[in-house]
Image (cartoon, rainbow, N blue to C red; front, side):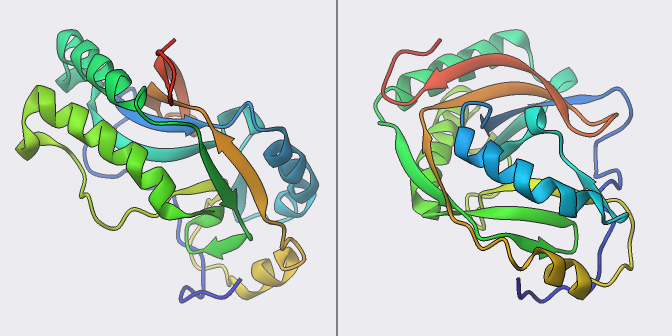
Length: 211
């Protein structure tokens, strides 16, 4: 549970471009089909609920952030469909990937499970980035290709200045490493008015035709 952060920082500040009612197209791994992860989350949930500075994430909204596209009011439906098709074609050439989640980490903005190996997920992210570049050109691919740290968040900090040491101590017994087999990645329309909520636009399978 060690880390450089010593206290919480409110996760819910309005990042550049965001405002109430606005949504964002992005690619996420959704994890609703991962029973071992959900069993782990059910065990840790009681301890997360005890921390007033944390907002535990409901199970149906667990996810692994992968690659953004753009705000929905700035992306045409034609471009979105083209990006989805280009990504689906590339992802069909990949196979399902095996990763491990854990152990639990608490940092300034919340509690999460890091993903290892990073490279396994980065291959999928690169395929999506190439699809966006095919449609818009490499210069318009959002977000940096570097500094990718895939993870599944379990809770977000809702206030700043709360010491992290007691939170880390309370969660230190959760040393589990949870195996996942990732078979699909989703293009979603993400809104954050009431926490992160989304509508799935399309789902692309790894190694199989998109659905």
